Length: 279
Image: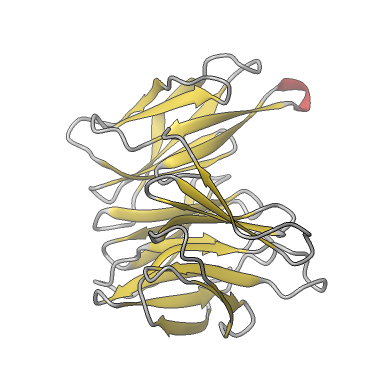
């Protein structure tokens, strides 16, 4: 998805579901929503006065909003039928752990975990079923800029800046034990895991670098295994996502250029470039 744009899945009656697009980049601080077939987003959530939205992430029937105060608000969202207006349950659940603005969050529906990162340098794990605190990990004072989680193992990765010319990539188990860390030769701008079934392939972490390189890292020992390069995008990738079958790696720039790399198992030319209209 483009930056500050989120896919919200709504579970409906009789096992059906609906998908909506949320956007959180608006200057008035209002989270807006639209159905996939609509063009104009409608107001959905207004945060409390004097608060600023710094991050937003969606789970099934949940919207998690990170604020400049370090607070996290969790809204439950539902609809009775496909295509109907969404209903937001009030008041939201308030989660407290951070002492500085929220800078990033990642939510895993597979493991019912949300990870939040802040300018205080902390990564906090939350239980998305109970909407409760699990544990905190990190070093105070080093901002967490990116988070991602493996949907097969539950391992997760964090990125912190190392000055303005590099980043530190850290890999953790789901229980918070540090597996390894690596210093990258350029700042990391986006992060994503593959999700192949264990035993059938070696999963990797994909990181996009400010110099335009996509670097792949082994999830076993955080060893760099491959680099992908292109001179077509001309901008750092702002968001990365693997397709469900892991045969395509999609990256999108701030200006809306979508770059798609295909596995050698797919017999078409690579990469592809598509301009995505703004949301």
